[in-house]
Image (cartoon, rainbow over all chains, first blue to last red; front, side, top):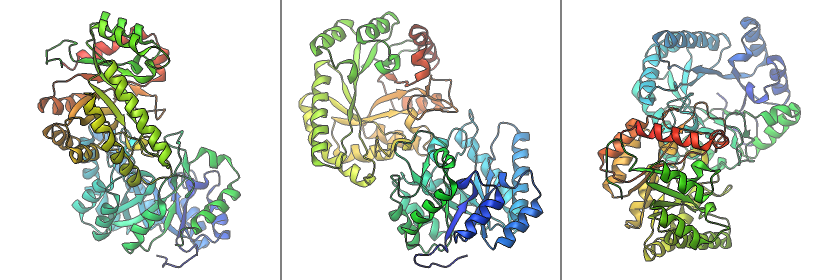
Length: 278
Length: 278
């Protein structure tokens, strides 16, 4: 993992979804040419093509493959649905191992019409199988708590407190947490829960972007760091104070930016990132 | 306040915004003809017309005016902005008194680019003036915690825990809480915080509707009770268990329903309400 270095890009990682229009080869090439050191690969960039070739491209790039994004979605009304989800998560662990990713991000899932408690039970049950499988494959799993506006259908884990409880329940070096400022910035307990997360050795990953005000779309209207209303400097301060030394992963879903010139967007991302002095 | 009565409409209250296309007179007439007993009046239905006349219409209707909706939005970068907001809240208290409303609902406010802590301080400062003013006018204020997806610009009070803390800080019979299931359903601490709210004599109002899955608009895509994913029976159970005897106020913002035939919509609302056996 990259060490801390002032005013450099050594801890900057991009999620391929951020520059959505670029296929894997192009993203890899553009990131390298910009001096970026880390890449988090979304699974759709691997599917429908040869996994060995993708693995080779990533290996030869010299980029650190920080995370494979994303597994999870463990919940479901029927056993069959949940079994399929678990199988798909094992496949994701295999893919993560194939591309030498350090982690697999988990969006844990929620099923409309099913109580959140039931979903949380199903998530725990799935992890009881998946954590040992991940350990066997040398892949660390990271629970990503999602904003409460996604509690209906995407995740029944909506606060860092809940993610901490889940990680502490398993108490495994193969299960930690991805803190995404987009999902958690509003939480009055964020500082204390980041502290708890780091103290418990569960702070595995940090995702950054910004919250646009007003936000016009619940999914794809995220903002570039510094252009929204999240107090990012402050949250990064809490994280750094706890000794986090990993990558800052930039994950921006934005129809607006995706429609724009991606080279210009990448330049803006880097300019924005450098302001945080990481 | 209406007592509990099985399978009746005695505890049903409608927010005028729910049947948005109907002006005040029409809403009042339709509600009465449907057997509804309570009305919560949105301020825009009072503005641009004679307040005494509105007051007379409401008085003659025999409907209980449960709440005036809404005051708040206390925050702002400049003193002038905040002073204007406070003056407007005093005017809202006056209006509430004029129409004999029991309560004034407060959406506390948040200002983009200002930290949530600063906003919360400004909210407290405003309440220090507004609570005594409300007491003088015999109007109870209710803090309505808003969903975290509104933390950027509408409210820095986003959980029932925060609202409880604020109400307990003031410890006044003139300041309580409006629990709106739309904003709070996802909270893993909801049951314990409802308990705390009721124990502290702060549970003044309950707003109900449902969360549509998927939700396509962050503001105006709410669902009719029973058609979304909120476990309303369960939450009502927690509330009833604590001895709440007030109205269940139906507050549905929905471009879809507003475009539909409002008489049919009202019938659907009543049908849905009756399923909860209140």
